[in-house]
Image (tube, rainbow, N blue to C red; front, side, top):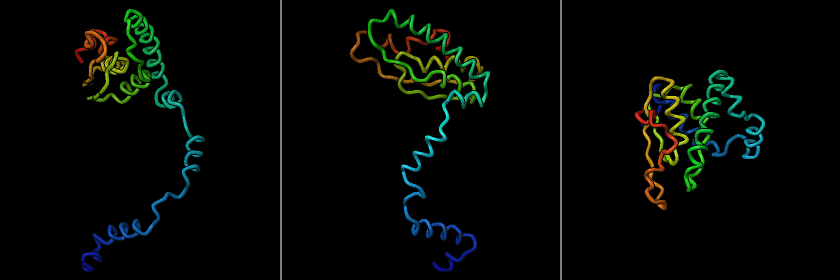
Amino acid sequence: MLTSALSPKRFPVMLKKILKRLAPDKGLISKEENLRWLKTHRVGFESLARRLNNSLWDEATSYSDNFRHRAENTLRNVEYDLGGGGYYPLLYFLTRYLRPGTIVETGVAAGYSSSAFLSAIKVNGCGRLYSSDFPYFRLPNPEKYIGILVEEGLRNQ
């Protein structure tokens, strides 16, 4: 075992393991110091998105404004509360910016997120969304409400 430990290939690994076991578990700074640092260095998503791609963030907010208006009109005719959407401008932006080949979504509900993903995929010209959800159990004919905000032309993705 000692011969193995002194092997030039294994010695650095074993030394790191020994030092890790001897070092205290706690970080170098306290939880409060970590939180203070985070608060002074945080950046809002809009400012980050603008730094990454200003015109793409403008596109995402334009999409978001149009979609919000359409969603409000659609949901106005639904007598049940289907819940709200996530931060769909962010989802649209990230999908456009990262151009993922596959997106997996759980919890479709009315379809705010799904619409953002699918709209961005359509503009990208590539990608696929895999979504799943349980129906609204307490509503009559609950399947008709899942993804109600997703336009028919986007559902093939």
